[in-house]
Amino acid sequence: MPLLEVSRLSKRFGGFVALDGIDLAVAAGERVGLIGPNGSGKSTLVNCVCGTLANATGTVRFDGAEMDGLTTHERTRRGIARSFQLPRPFATLTVADNLRVPLLYTVNARSGPTLTPAELDARCAELLALVGLGDKATRLPRDLTQVEMRKLELARAMAADPKLLMADESMAGLSHSEVDDIVTLLVRLNERGITIVLIEHIMRAVMKFSQRLVVLVSGKKIADGKPDVVIRDPEVERAYIGQ
Amino acid sequence: MPLFLVILIAAAALVFGGARLIGNDYVFFAGYTVLQFIVLATAWNILGGYTGYVNFGSAAFFALGAYATVFVHKTYPLPIPLLIVIGGAVSAVVGFGMGYLTLRLRGAFFAIATLALAVVLQTLVVNWDYVGGSRGAYIIRPNEVALIGPYIQYLFLLMLALVVIALTTARGIERSQLGYGFATIRDDELAAEACGVPTLRLKLIATTLSGGLMGMAGAPFPYYIGYLQPSSAFGLEYAVNSIAMPMIGGTTSWVGPLIGAILLGSLQQIATVTISSAVNLLIVGLLLVGFVIIAPNGIVGLVQDRLRARSK
Figure 1 (spheres, rainbow over the protein chains, first blue to last red):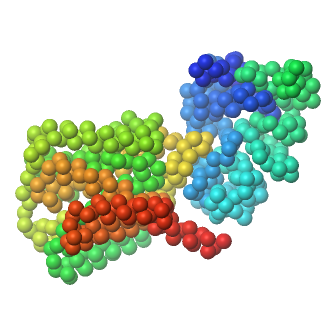
Figure 2: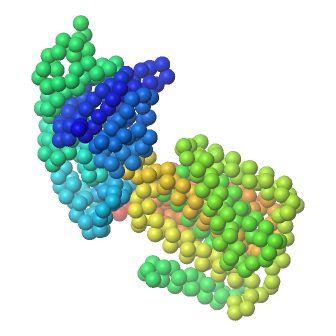
Figure 3: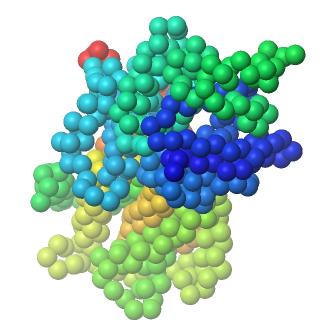
């Protein structure tokens, strides 16, 4: 049974069809790349899966349960985490406190033993060390560089202890070496057992990261398979380069 | 008992003792107003400062507490501490209702909705004859209270107790899971939801707590003023001051509204005696403009920024 199962998902904004009958299944532990030109529906799909937007038709099933009707925070607690296209840190909280929020509201909100204050501190420190922000714990997000902000975004998503991470353009605007940094980080997170769907425009990063590639164009899925096969698909080439 | 509460109670005892040493009833009259503004500003800050939802209807919650007192006083007179609990409960319920009805509104739309609530409630009170309607209601209070002395000193003591409750509540929130949740709503509601924060539920908690504390501040007011009419209970100065005081002091910490209320409240009392009460709102306006330019995060924010810059 797949971890994430999206069936015939549609979403319209007035007359504009953003998603048109999307089917997508993601297995546990998989690294999936989701690509498509601007306006193809990638972020809308992320928003529908995470509960930020309500889908018009179709269903989202996660870990065997139907997600329709659940709010974003309820889906996060069930194990769907996301990072945002533009980093959205909590500006008045320190870097460590940015991670404390999902630990308090997601990890501690699940059934089972809750983390003590000392365990919370330790978990924040561990996650910050994992993404290379160990020395920035007491800083405010405004003191971080662009790549550090992206790392904070990923660390915060990780703090919710997710089963699935939807990483929405985590590398936009980064330099060559910074992109490599983030790809390495994402692979490391995946090795810890987290299923990752990477939405990205930087093809070098997508090809390096993905085990499977899904292509959306105008709200429709046009290809789904091994990256080196999908990338040579004539329909994908047409969508990206034109006829 | 937590250390913070012990310190607050000791500070309150010192203030009361100091005021009694001066031996002038006017100190209690003026001090009561400053204390009342500390409670109002702290209450406003729980919603406006911690979650970022600007409430322009503070006067409505304050007046609800005051009119709850008038209603109970006419129906079945009770001691003021009980009236404070009743006034707080009524305003908390209305705060919950307002939160529920305005859950999807943000920014200017939420602010306008709270302003509309104040107008609607004032219209209701003006047309409610039982609590005095537009002509107002008299509350005859005793001159003295056993063990304490003059009644104004009793009211001052009650307001001091409310200050202790309000500050303890605000500081407790700030250092709790609830405080982190409120801060995330203020900073980015969408990201907060994505981190598992139940933003709608937390907003309801904030509107209820904030409204309840404002109602508690308003409950003893009819006894203080002696004659309550809609224009005094729903006065513009309550709405303006309860916003300006936290803004000037700083909205991200419990200390901010305290500093702002002491500073502005005292200035207004001095201006009332030395110049005229009519200049009060002018002082608030000028100070607010000055702080928006010099220190947009208030006095606390200014100090925090300096300390942070020094530590880098």
